[in-house]
Image 1 (cartoon, helix red, strand yellow):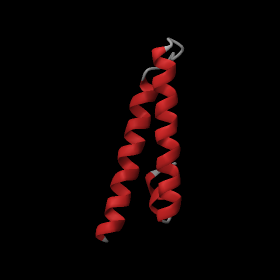
Image 2 (cartoon, helix red, strand yellow):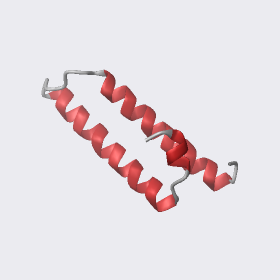
Image 3 (cartoon, rainbow, N blue to C red):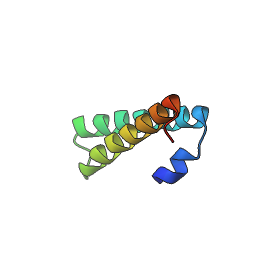
Length: 65
């Protein structure tokens, strides 16, 4: 999802997206440890997605945007 699409979501949907991203990161770490992960950049992309979602949640808490 793009950042603008994430900003349009409400708090529960953002929490759901965050949980899915954490699950995806867990699966990537598992695949990395078993030498099944081909593209290592996927982990960085998922970590970035988690950071973006956390930032949007914090912005909503503070009423910034």
